[in-house]
Image (tube, rainbow, N blue to C red; front, side):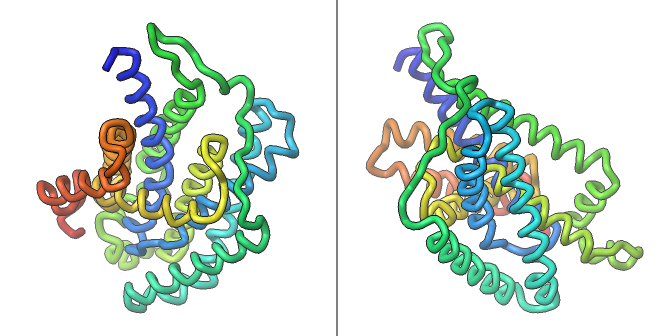
Length: 293
């Protein structure tokens, strides 16, 4: 493999990792704070992709219009997340974890049918803005500009999450909830409100990931379940509850997908599970997982 081909392969893997990190960071935040494996996470991703496809048509196909479209899509899904947390999950916190899992699974099936009824079974791929389309030359490699955009944006999201977790009061409370969520209620913290914030941020991140990757994929039925599995694998590899783990897990899985598709096409889909098994054999709680998990 030439140096240029290797560079393209790595950047392809990192672009996959960028989207996986954004989506998986929302899942791991929800689990870490609320101890809920949210099966509707894939639905939020799907709605983000669909809404971007619709709203981008209302804007001129320029970068600012694209940014406005994917932010608007993510905000709409954030509101949906707040509604779901308030009407459904809030009533189940004292119940068994299996009940929470089944409730979110049922909601995922409902949302899947809603998407099918509203948008149909056909697939669609929205265009990307001209300024981040095409390729750029780096040495002997021809690199899609959108790959670079995804990687840079994911790094911005990681830095924003770091600032949120370490420099804001609500972020510190969320981090404390990951460490010991039961202790917070004993010192007067409104844990239910904290759960609402965590679930809303998780929904926002899932939708953001869906909106960002929409120009690079066929937006249609089934994308919710596929990303749900992938993001769960990333969260498990990184350690459920850890944003840093989600980043490292996404890079590992993204590169495994990229190189697996090239060198082991017959078993490419299984490559991420193979990586997960290896990591869990070495680190049963994931790379950054806490003992509690």
